[in-house]
Length: 115
Image (cartoon, rainbow, N blue to C red; front, side, top):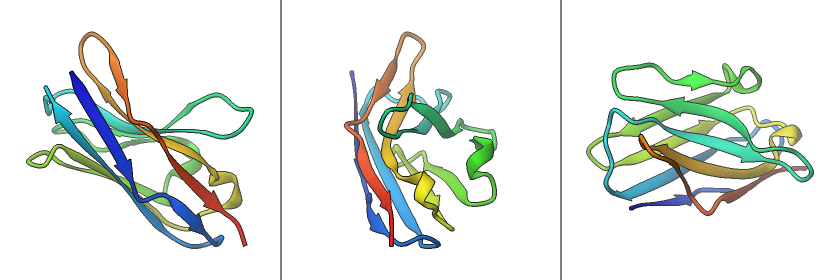
């Protein structure tokens, strides 16, 4: 089993920054991807960024140049540094871990970008 616990969400003004963290516990392998998804009200969940050992982060077009994903393999923790935030970035952000048999999800953390 895998457990994922996110932290770092909150309210920020447009143009501001937030850093999300996701601590994973259980059977974690560095060769499996960890990532961040988001879901805004009335919309489907969508990939924001993902990262796997030995590879660069993979980003959705709408966050390229603004968000950076990183992973501490010793701590089994993945981070999402979000800069130049826009109101349209408002959503619940979910951490994910993809094993060979299923995808695990965190409980989600709310990010609200508003003045």
